[in-house]
Amino acid sequence: MEKFVYLEKVDVTFPTKKGTFHALHNINLNIDQGQFFTLIGHSGCGKSTLLNVVAGLQDASSGMALCAGREIKGPGPERGVVFQNHSLLPWLTCHENIYLAVERVFGRQENKAKLKQRTIDALALVGLAHAEHKRPHEISGGMKQRVGIARALAMEPKVLLLDEPFGALDALTRAHLQDELMKIVAETKSTVIMVTHDVDEAVLLSDHIVMMTNGPAATIGEILTVDLARPRDRLALANDARYHHLRARVLEFLYQRQMRPAA
Image (cartoon, rainbow, N blue to C red; front, side, top):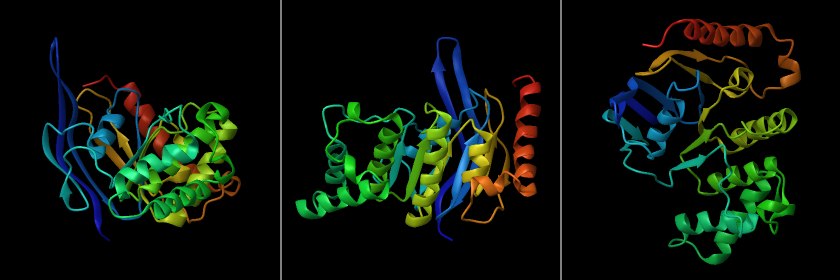
């Protein structure tokens, strides 16, 4: 498999009034094409910082960060990002929010008809073709997040980066969007890195779960392979012994780290 994301000995430090803060230390990570990785750990362990390094929103202080064989230097269309806040422009319709991104990426290569079709296809992929002319204030929180995912996917990124995209949603909407995301990833064969605090979400969605140690100088404590067959059904997994074993492994790691004093 092609290595889409490769991190070697990555450290991230920030200057503060009290001196240098060491956020991440010695991060080594290999992600193959089409894999779904989640990052999990306690608050302040650097999950979002690590995601931002891959997104190009945060420079590594040392070490190597590559995407599709190229050094990561700033944001790029090969890496689509979806934040917890949907980040839609409120004065634009759902269609226009996506079209804006599509035009920036493909505007020099394709005519307006092709750009429009890309936008329509992206909305259809997340089940929102009926809402293309609505503005963000006219749709629900879950629908806004689906537009954000559609916008990222419309750019055909090599890697889809998700920073707790369902964290602010109610439990039922969150479960529905998790199921939708699994279907979309299966259809698009996307490579995904997702930050989450939710153990059940991590086990349900992931091929691998990256468990982070507490900060400062947080690092990867363990990477757990989720060897559950796909497609996955949350109701069937409720009675699956392997699912519960994997869930217990993550909880055990998080509990043990919580009980240890920060380094």
